[in-house]
Image 1 (spheres, rainbow, N blue to C red):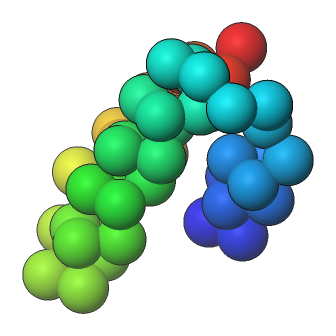
Image 2: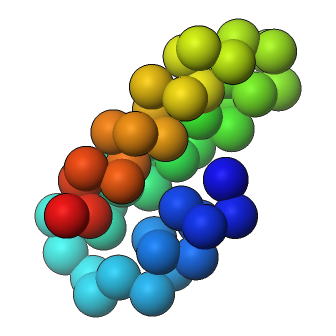
Image 3: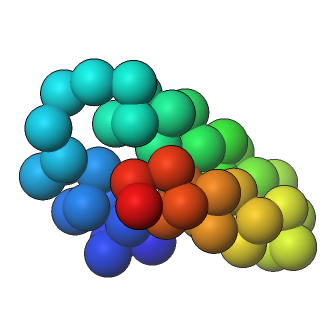
Length: 51
């Protein structure tokens, strides 16, 4: 998760960064709820949004 967070922080402002941060926050909530499959899905979506 730290790698995705770093990538989000370093990304230039814009719609890609906003989308990635939304997915990252969703992944944090899933992690808190111990929904690991959902967390991994959201992290993948965040990574894809930055690509």
